[in-house]
Image (cartoon, rainbow, N blue to C red; front, side, top):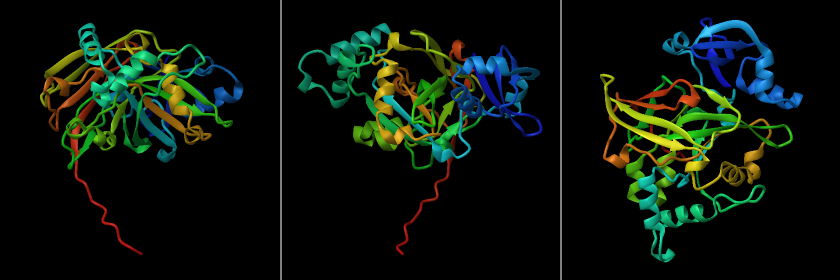
Length: 330
């Protein structure tokens, strides 16, 4: 099942199930968050409650999308109660990439860079037995709900940034129950979007490079993630022509960590189990246009697409003017 959040022509929020180009509106709930809270309270599966609550009213997805009425598939009324985070060095990539990576991480551990040491740890211990924690992944904070952009909205690169590059990823979408229990609603396609030039200057700049917008959606795929996921990442120039394109793979079959292990090492912290909070957590990628020497310019568009997630995620790159806050002593 694919869930879509959108606004009607009159501006009212709605949530619905996407079937082809048709959004079948779910009655009694105005958001994915409301629907998920009700499913937890009733002790039922999210997909079951959505199915039994689907009415006869429909909306055309392409009409809503062209009018800019599609919303992020999960959000919170107070953006400060939405954490956006991620894990890196989690993906094995294509067969060629895997072979090259295994050659890099072989031999003496002390001769490896910190990144390669982290990747090797994941390969060796990122998929523990069920119910047991494995090795910790690389982890980073991106921001709160205010940085999330849905399909059709611009990804804003601050004017002090050195780069604005895509990272086609799958994100897990979560809600923390009233008892502090994390619930995974499902998954969405995403563009984690980072400053790779800043990160490449020094790996300790990773934290700075991640404090950017991100693209999520447009649909939330309810249920488990298939072990093998295929997709395509593209850069379109200002005239809409494909300038760069590459296939990517994800899912646990193509990862050095299990989803359960990545979730364990995020939600083991009490800070991330605050009742009512929403979490969007990116699981990493192995495919970047930056790695092929591509630098994206303002006005060009990122497109991330995978058939199992429904419509493509499209975001145009923009540059935002920064108003520096000069601190005043009191």
